[in-house]
Length: 450
Image (cartoon, rainbow, N blue to C red; front, top):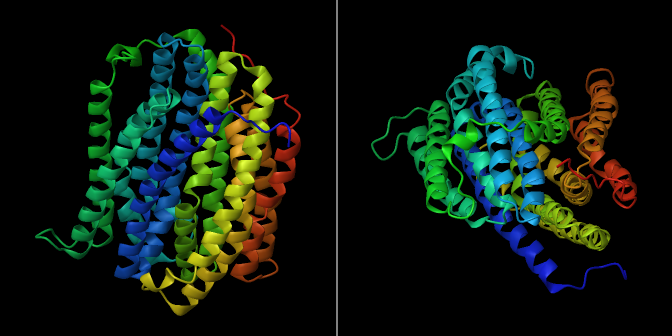
């Protein structure tokens, strides 16, 4: 306990960053939750179809978030060194990679939507409806690629309020258009599931232009210019690739695993798909602080490494680990209580509601592990420069342990959806032991080549 930080500025920085980022995450999840509720009230088929289509969107989003994480890791170090010119170069490289991913995922979703969805379910109606949704929403990937990197650049400089304001605008636009286009209110055409996808696309476009406008207005310090995105510095590109490649592979592995998990539950019936969608959406909403703590930790630790405060890094990491556990326990309590008060909002079958309640009970326990291991690995270890370890760790746990066990349980032993869900989420507890050992050995601090 003597290693805990006693400096008030550390706690002020951590909690202010975490709360603002948590609010932004909450608003982003609220957009997804509103989609979930509106479609859940429309029909169970629409909810299941959008849930499957969103797995493809989840892969695209996760990869582009991987690009932004790499920007934060590098740029926060330069911010700690008070060097702004390299931050512009990092932003340019991150934007180029993110746009490439956005375009490729857009083309994949546009050309192969039915084939991609058929890998996750054999329900023809769900596939047909999901393909319509995915075809429209895939156009938003390019706009999200731009928005994501610009906000990451600002976050690395501890400028986080812009993202919160942008998210508020997106929430209002998305909810208004979603409700109007799904049900045909306010003089808008009744488009059902396609209306929800159209609302998401319009929201992403507006969001992108708002962020660009904010960047132009608040760009005095960074002085980021359009040319910075076309002149790629070779050394920065080399360093970025070294950090980003393991993160992108880890993101692809994790997102692909989530799609396989949904596919496993998808082959166990429409009720299992709907229950998973409901439980996952509510879980994402109550864990916003846990995920925000990972980003704020990456900024704080990256800045500390850039400033050369190696004597403080040990105390920082010890303190952060205690905070993660406290956040996890509080989150678990909130999720357990919430499960009895939200399911009435959904127009789904009683079987789906019972499954969703069981899934949320399981998540209220595993979230304690998630709240510790996820920020410890992606916030502390990755920000120190050791991104390869996290990639191997995710791959081994998910693809060599969890998914094979789940596939055997679902298709060979015919376990119930609840038992399969326990197996699918067990890695969140198991990873804690690995994270505990790795973080406290302090071999994850890597100095960048200059």
